[in-house]
Image 1 (tube, helix red, strand yellow):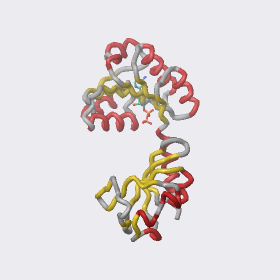
Image 2: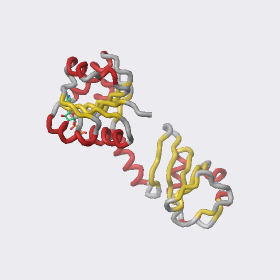
Image 3: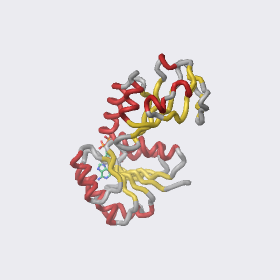
Image 4: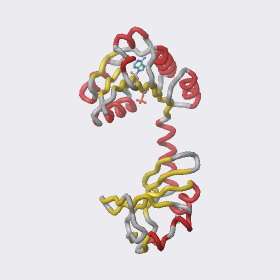
Length: 216
Ligand code: ADP
């Protein structure tokens, strides 16, 4: 389904987000106060316009209320990001996502009505640290503070055995939801599936159990 997105602030984060949405076939309006940024963004989005998002009249004239989701990707100018979120909510935009560069900005954005506050630098730092600490973990999704799904390189000691023999459910309290052999992904592995060297298991479970398994 095609949705209408507006991305305000076409810095590194904003342009990457806007370009990815546009690449996925969505309608994306890019907005920036800086003419050069808008020029650069023209080919990466449906439309790009110069506007100051702290000016309510400018927001009204681009019809900001008609967008399903507005992402405020202004990071460094904290005052501008807060004022923009406040105005967007006052104008009745249903879903406002805002980028914060620190905790305090995040708290204020939350208070003025942001529906979702994101911390790209903080989150990416945490991800990279996690993957450095567990080199067998290739990727992960945190489901909650306690549970995650992780892509884990199979430890050498576990190859050439079937899932049944490995019995990860009993030994580690983990469930294997998919197995990646090179480019192929088996999303409903049978218990007799033999795990080969180089395979990657997609595993769901408690964070402690995942850590124990990933660090074998
Ligand atoms: P990043 O770290 O992702 O590059 P920046 O904070 O450096 O993020 O970039 C934010 C962008 O937001 C800049 O291109 C800047 O011109 C734009 N911006 C800042 N204030 C406003 C505003 N009031 N209205 C619209 N765009 C703005």
